[in-house]
Amino acid sequence: MTLSEMLARIEDWLRVHAPATAGAFAPPVTDAQVARAERALGRRLHPDVLELLRWRDGADDTHLALPSCRATASWRRGDRR
Image 1 (spheres, rainbow, N blue to C red):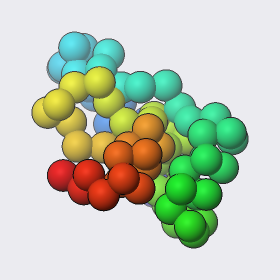
Image 2: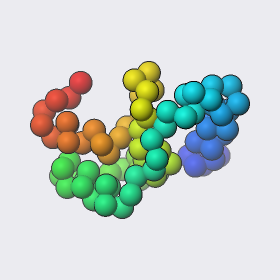
Image 3: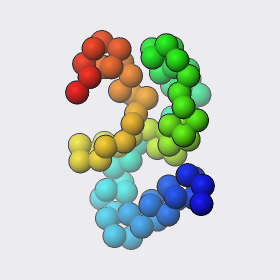
């Protein structure tokens, strides 16, 4: 099973069993966001991380631990929580 298939299954399950959590996901990243994140990090994103971000760019729920391109600005400033 590919990562994309696994993510689709997870999202389908969440929509049925935890709709509030499913609704907390941020939209997918754009190419411009990826480029900014890679510049901020000084390296290319791993293909698996990129695939995850193209599915959803993190979540707006503090209980979900998903990577986010939006977090790179904080990381670059040294705010590595």
